[in-house]
Image (cartoon, rainbow, N blue to C red; front, side, top):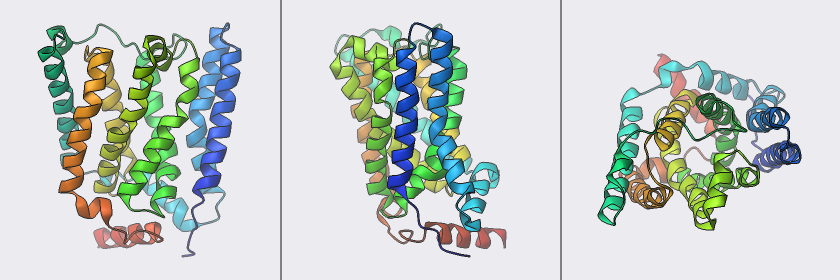
Length: 284
């Protein structure tokens, strides 16, 4: 099959231009909740839409087959790693709350919230999180992460993509009704913490993505789990700052335990070819 050349700069320029353009329009329509919600959802869809269009118009059979396998290839899932990801993240939450309590935080943080706070313009928070988890992963894992991973080790890719992913959210801090706007209202330190928190989270996502043979379903499940944990566990914003530090320590452990995964460069320049070889071996 013909080699495919990933174009990460073109992909991310298009994604940012479209997403930020729609979200800027949503901000202009902030006095009309229904219109603002619709425009914001369109902006949310842009990474996925760009990824799918990029793949389908590529005229490259290998790239198209890869996307298809990532979406429907349930056989790629390794439940043990996903459960381990849940455990590591859960431990991070518990330890963070424990540290908070040691410094005077409320033990009530170990309880569940009555409702979700995360929403867009007053829409159903649970629906919003489901949409965000699925749609974002189709875009990021459908093309975005691979476009960077094709040229770097998974360690470097995780650093680059985490920075991109954090910056992609920036307009949301200006739009009333979003979780991000609430953080901005609380203070700059909470905005900074959100941006920094994308790094340990993305390292965990990358680890699960590669361990599950680049399965999109694995990252969707983990993304949704993180969103629900962040919403249903009654952590204070201050504890979430502690959580970023705790998760960073956990990620250091994950990286050290998986040095071959994060630092190998065998896939660089031949990501699709390597996956094709692995799939062929597993089928036989």
